Image (cartoon, rainbow, N blue to C red; front, side, top):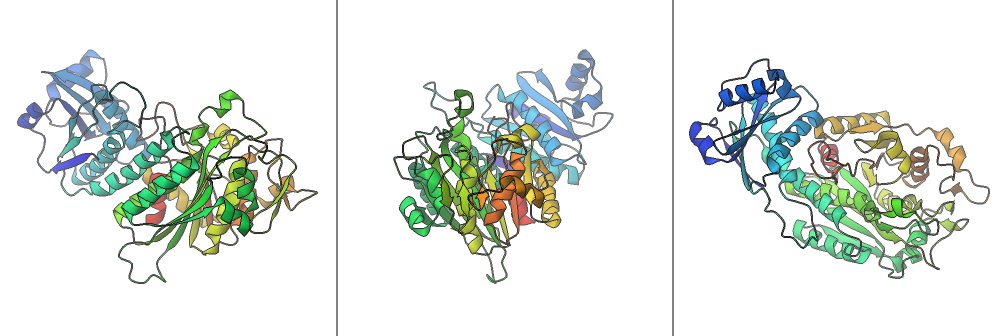
Length: 483
């Protein structure tokens, strides 16, 4: 975990001599403020034929007396995403040299300093350590300590908690499929629960079959291991005086530990990386870890649908009709639409507790990725009020979303002549909307937000995160809980 030290005093000559790597963050302006290294920066801008205002678009690095310093301007009125991106690019200018310590000099007024300190702490904590790797070469040492000059009591602890949740999500998502089978995942969840004081209840394959969770079991039956399960993890909340009035959230995550596509087998190009199809469940765990560290006064029920979508003689097939936990008869159209199947029964379980809100997270459809690319994720909400709440959380967290409609007339595409509903269509048109309409059959009348995680991975990094794995959804989810 990154150590953050706040120092109210401004960055001095003596301080500069003590660090080999520094970041200077200042408010946007047409001239440079008084600061250490001003003359060196002025000379560097002149050599590169840059105006001072260019510092708001891209950071500038200056090397002087064996020290590497990066300068950047931040616009405090800009969205969180843009501020995070600017600081992340600044950090990347230093990261190539693998520093173990870094100082951040923050200039400007009190409000700017506080905001910049929180942003910087979040970005540095997210990128302090590399993700898990099996390379035989020894990994570089991570960033261990960051000293923030010009601030005190900025509230960086909250940002560190959210960053820790994001790192947990990315670490889990990065693990190879031979290490994160459903069975091994369940062990890791129990260890996390012990660490954070959560309670755990497992609905194993045999139990789910007896309960009538036919949608989940249809997918899980293809695996010879039979280690699939719906895992219920509960965070009881902290400092809650009246539990009857405390808000109750249900967070549901798709946890397909590997997706072959089943009998409708994926080609190699699209099967590669399908160990990451459990990202939605990792997002739920990341949110819960952050909420626990922040001691949020809410109750959270996490519901994780853990399975693998295998091809085998026992795997489910096209044209089968299965009965979901809530009694809905589903006609199977495509075995690679397994995510909505495991989520159907998991949402049914989550809705039984009548939470104030269900939010589910899933790397669900290719059509969402085609619609948005990998820089934003799409959400659906059961009311305009919820949609606005989701948008405010996105603005605050720096994780951008697009709200999509889910009109009822799309249901006609899922009409079946032999069952209550088709699982999907073969046309592929608007599958992100059709998947949402399908899932809506399993949440009842509970307020519900569905996030299709098209931004779970983004080459070159995204917002605050430098790695391809983004951990998208954790910061947004914490903002939802706090809102």
